[in-house]
Length: 397
Image (cartoon, helix red, strand yellow):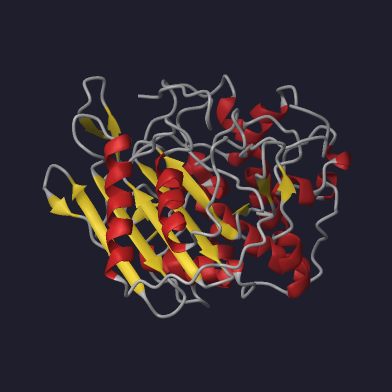
């Protein structure tokens, strides 16, 4: 069932959380924290269990998979709870998750490669591209503004044409139609006049990639990123089938019990905004690659990591990247899945926090709360501050 959520991330309940984070201004030297210290491991475990209880119902959150790296060769990977409650199967690092809006980090990486190749400029207007759907005021909306969520375009997943009666696992959606519905709605503001998280931006970016390459965005992601970087457990699927093994996703029923909501959102609806599937180890490698500038040139990488303020506290957003207190990454979610992947280049610390639940209350949402707690252990001098939602009227797969 589709349940509307307001007040933190989402108005349209089908697709869930993507927090955009602000760039830190803290000047303190990063603390040296090593995972060989049993006290550090104990603190991490306590943090996970706190979040499981806080966001749980009659029982804690069904499943959590966490990977933490200290940048010095130390690794802590732990599964908590079950990947499948009905089979009572424990969570493992081999389990596949739907990664939601972490898909956007792949879309941006392909786009930046095309910029490097001279196929387009970040400051090109949207009207330059023949994407099969007219974008009102497109001559004044740039590719950069799409990437930064500063176009002002209405959220495709908030349109009245989408409702519980037509969003089913076997439903087929075309991004052209979703975009057309979105641009028929009044924009939030003129181009570059503010920040508002809208998946419409990334559905358009996917079509721009396809127009420039005469290829599907999924094939471009595979050809340019998944195959070269040997991300063998990551995919841009064309069907609802999940690779073995995979974690089931859950939501809380009214009585506080857990309801299996796996595979309830059609992949054709998510598209370039959040269609992909991966594993913890693949994504740990991936976030180091793209945050570290390994997937595109130096100039486009500088542009990627220039985080614009969102207007709430220190929170900011770059070209498909969230930034807070020296951490760079992304959070994605949809019913049953919430995945946060953040890298701290100053020390090489990395946190991958995956949860078989999408729940945005209390703020900042379950995966982000988990990331914050783990990051505070790893970088005590640079604790992420996510006390305010960066886009209270937004949503993302």
